[in-house]
Length: 427
Picture 1 (cartoon, rainbow, N blue to C red):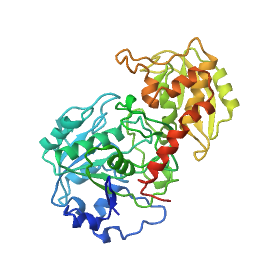
Picture 2 (picture 1 turned 135 degrees about the vertical axis):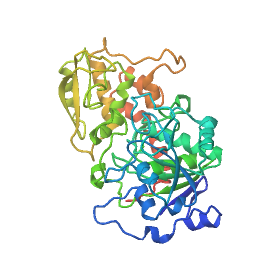
Picture 3 (picture 1 turned 90 degrees about the vertical axis):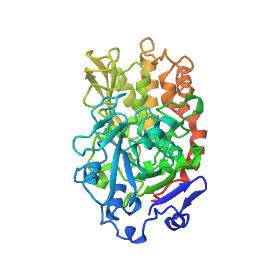
Picture 4 (picture 1 turned 120 degrees about the vertical axis):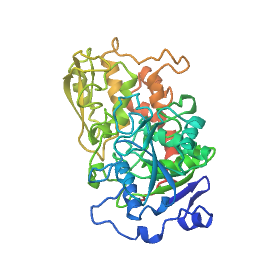
């Protein structure tokens, strides 16, 4: 069923209706059991119920190319042609609603040729500026339907956070149409963001691999971090279990961004995404970003050393590649290709740390942390990605991956307790 969440916890749909929101979902909307092996996303559940949750509302939606149905039609195209819902606006995040922009870009304001709807550019917009966009659009309810990749520094979850905050400021209802965590929801991994390193790649104190759906994250944001909680509804997944990988649900994979081409990419990203904070290429400009990692100074010894570590669920082979853009563009790089050989055993963050520790030990005169001269208070990109100085300073001190992991164990345990309160799917 759908949930309304606040700092006081979860209220039933009946309680929300009694509170006068007028947005309760009839019980019969959730009576149909999914067929064996069937997974239904939040938007499908909303449609199954004839859009009752947003009936008589002017609706806008924050979405991108991942907002699709299993038959590959985009939800905006379907809703725009459906008289049961009054869709009046689309809000485009990083890379844009139709996905035409590269990393760090967006599409600007335009009228969508296919639907005739206005598309508002919300990338890097937050606070009152984003609230003003929602107000200007004329919507009563803002919906969110974007596929996440499971990592704290994948910015769509902060688009969710900013949108919830702005909706609360503007007095708009907020509806999250839930989608699966593609790398499962078994557990959380990695260091916790600290306030002094809060940026758009990490606004609040969650784990580097959070192990939650966007709906669960919305509940956590509302209950723990938003000073003014949103009037939030979560349209839940049906048929999803916490140990399900993305393919298990039978959903087609749509690239959430240009450098997230496959589910395999998502499984490693929470770890190898840290290489964006180093002078190694993280594989941007290749066909296997975040699986291929290397630099012109790396040779076969790195793959050999990583193989000797016998990291759970991980395999490595020597690899050579020439990125077409980004770091080391048009230069031959030696390095590794990372393979996830056992998804249940694989820890993306510890694996990524072990890779950095090993490459730094092998090539001490060549390895370097990426430095941001525009931010003297927080000059190291790795600190922004990991959420504190702990990972970088531990690695610089010569600690191995086990010792680095021990440095975040306490905060991760505390986050796990907080996370538990907001889990919707218990199996």
